[in-house]
Length: 269
Image (cartoon, rainbow, N blue to C red; front, side, top):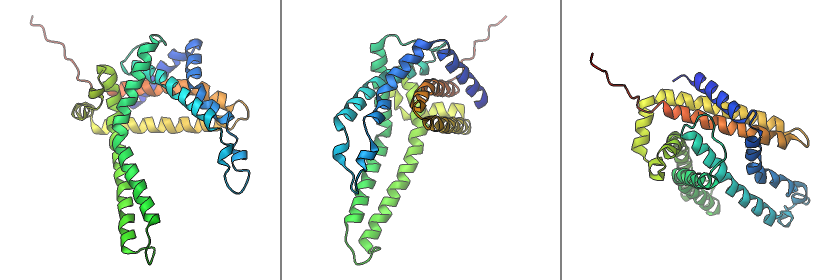
């Protein structure tokens, strides 16, 4: 697996998808707009005006409305990435909005199912931490509290291990769902494991490390852009669609490395 070639292909794919396709670019921006507008309805200075945070200064209704609309619209973006996962070349248009929305919801379900163990373990860690701070003892390291603390640390370690497993399997599962149209296949661990083995664990991990490096670079770039007064948030929204398409294409190409190669039959002369 040549990760450099995958990056080059993904960059060219995203470039072709957006450059000159301004309507498509604008649609991406509009679908992500509600989340970006949250910053304009909440004033942190009013929230921290006194010595005690003023929760009444938080416009909960407006924030909930924007988040609700943002979540609904995000399903269309997720549905678009599903089409990229299916290997559509060149990049697809925003058509068939109903199927886009449904595919986006299904992809969210696939990721939720993968994240469920993380959520359960995290909830257990939080409850144990609350019990630790709420418990009483003669010393901070009294035996019951020490046991709870060790349990919390164990759950944190389990959470980290689960996170790595979910990342490794969930990415392939998301593309597998897109290819099969089945949520069940998106969480079919043994089939996903077979795909990873076909491409090779080392090659797969290297490809993911490259993706992480790209994500960090994107975070740095958007972080710098967001510091620009007045227009920083607009620049971030302009860059975001390119990254979304790039990473979706990259994941698709990585998945294809694990697809069984069909050898054409040899015709006897």
